[in-house]
Amino acid sequence: SDLPSKKHDEIIATVQSVCREHGLDSLMQKHSLDVLVAPSGVPAWLIPTSVETKEMADSAAAEGAHRRPNLPQLRGSSDVTALAGYPLLVVPMGSALPADATANSYPMPVGLSFMGAAGADAALLNAGFAFEQ
Image (cartoon, rainbow, N blue to C red; front, side):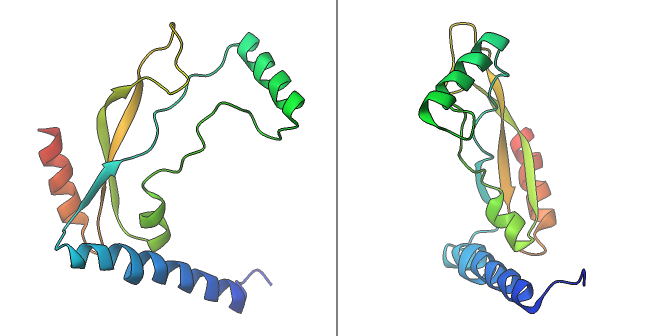
C-alpha cells in the first residue's frame, strides 16, 4: 500500500510534537516572542573549477571519503519550522565570503529567516517588511 504505516504516523507525530509544543511554541511562549529571527544558513559556496574539483576528488579518494570535502555541512535555521509545519519568511540580508574563500572569491548572498508559530503569517510578513525598509 502507498499509505503511510502506523509507525510512520507515530514518527511524524513525535517530530511535530518536539518541534512544536516542546520546541518553537515553548520557546516563543516562555520569552513572549511573536517572531524568531536568525540567519538562514551558511553562505552559498562557489562552484569549484575543474582543477579544484579534481583536487577535491583526489583528496576524498585518498581519505576514503564518500562525499565532496571542504563544503559546508551545516543545516539552515528553517529545519525546525519546516518539520513543525510552521510559516517561515526568508529575505535577503547581505553577502559574505564563504569559509573556503580564496583571493579570487566573491561575496555570496546570505538570507535572514523570520520564523513563527502556527498562524503567525501576518507577523512574519510585517517583520520582514520592517527589516527591508
